[in-house]
Length: 476
Image (cartoon, rainbow, N blue to C red; front, side, top):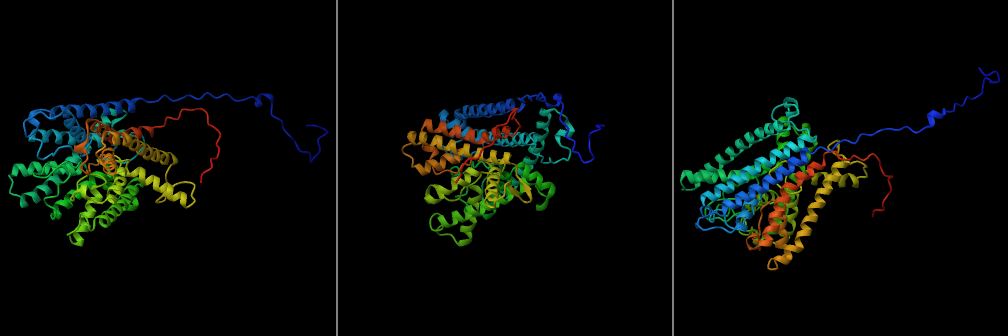
């Protein structure tokens, strides 16, 4: 003890020289996993390969009712539209293609739907979106680390569920059509199965006789049972596998995940908006001559179908310009993630809306239903929406040059329909040049497979061992 130290003296301790030296830490940069990237490239290649195979088969004389060879650009456009479950067509599906050609389109449409929802669901599950499967034991718990086995397990569950829903839809449609039509049972059964798969897959193809593609209901506008059946199938197919499974397990709204709540509430909001727009804009135009209840019923149907499937009762070539201007926005949003519908996905749109509302309320973190949404997901949603808009803006000048005979608003409507894999048509697709068809083929592939590529971005890839200084930017 220091003899000079007093009772009230303050002791100041200085660190040793060794303690002042910098501490060296070695940060191991995690290696990027190539599994997702490699399998996505394989998935994209398979889609493209199937489109070319289907297009080659559709060029055969046996595929057309006329028995002649079909131009490859027409066949490839139809095959791409089928494999991406879009529904746009340059020739009538019911009158131009033979039963063999229709079977090719049906196979592509079926295969594209099942494989798309399976791979998308698996990617979302693998990168941390914890939605339950129909069995409580998830693939991660029951199958270890074998990713291929996990995908096969998930695909089996999805395929079995979809087959049940296809069968129920086809049975309802067949019962209705067989009572109202005098066609043979074999013909009615084939048409019912085709229409059920097309409606659930949000595709928009139809082989009903005497009706051109995407005008599937023109001959039966008063058949509310058929319209209702198609509406239910489109809604279920457009919500997404995670939402369906979550709703199947929880059943009560307050127990649902934030993802499911956002999809359901935002879908309801958009259906109401779409119904109001169509009813007001087309009240004295394409809906003229109908009573108010029929006008309201048709507006509801077009609000649901116009955002996902592409079926329509009225002729969209005759709708008001206001309808042509607003409905591309609904198509651009599309349906739920891991669903049959296209677009930037309603999940991304809902996250953007949540961020905007939270910002207007002065909240630093976006929140909804008592849960916070991470800023990373807000950034990803904005990125997806921005890139979609950029793609449409980028191809529009080219199409405006190659298709000078098409009105700009009609061309914009059809381009968004192709990118959103919606299928609603104002009669532009069958007038496109070869360059225009090629751009639309690219738009359908990018619009269908692009969101899956963005899902890969959700995998953490920030391997930087440094961080820049934060600085404010003047806004407003």
